[in-house]
Image 1 (cartoon, rainbow, N blue to C red):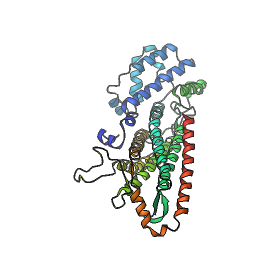
Image 2: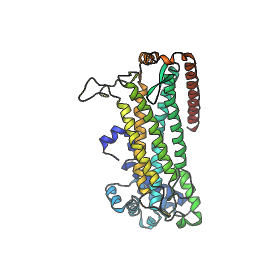
Image 3: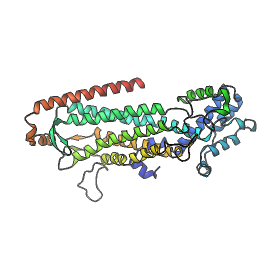
Image 4: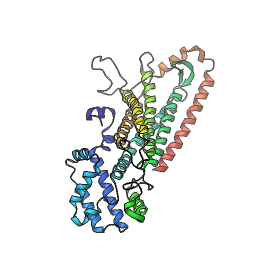
Length: 392
């Protein structure tokens, strides 16, 4: 992750907390605690061992763990060693039984993602609702359409807002689908086959998955498509907010003056030119849109994992996913604030439409078509809201 100041300029404290050291250690300890509980339930370890492991997890001291993990190359080695040292000697062998370092790392990442997803989904949903209001209000507000940045046919400002809305709704739905696909427990042991747990292994895996609120299935140590798919969906969501930001920033130019970000004290000014009113929220979203494609490419580049467990590919994923979530939440939050207080300068919009003489002949049919477009977009949004409410 970037340094705190630059990270906060691009994101939010809430989402950064989902992927900080404390969240990672908490998720890893949750895996170990619930693994022991599941194994005790199936008779692989004694209930007393599971209870001792739970106490060790609850009282875990993370001091120096970061340095130890950096030295070991993985978090699980020092974390498991500390847990084994913290339980009575007769229970040390029950700690981490049948699991491997990647099981801890992958499941911890999935648990952190589960914590972060509602934040991003909530911001996208709020942004979409604001855009729906904007589209509805301006369904027939005449506006000059622009293609290839040149004057085109008459549309309405509502059509422009409806296009933003459709992109955000589609991105949110895609992200939800990919999150469901990625919400799977990782438990496979050394080579992914649960060999150390014997025939009871799949049952233990199912119990552990249920305890963690995840899906159960064969270990995915070297199959990273679900993580890459989630990352790509985050990148698309960032791109959708970036499209909205690009349009607002273009229409804010004084030469057009059709829109303005809300005036907020201490925001949007210039250190050298006090007369300026800069599109600061758009800047946040657009900077995220510049960074996200490279991050997604990193995930795609890691897909050809070597044999039963790769080297370098899956280890690169956690910080990349964390950055994508940070950018996704930061961009959506920034643009939600923009749309919440967006100033729509209807007179300037109308003046540009009126000045384009070539659009006046077909004015009424064009606005009727615009209204139909907005109605269709709003119907799609209503279905998306219904689906979202049903999922909750």
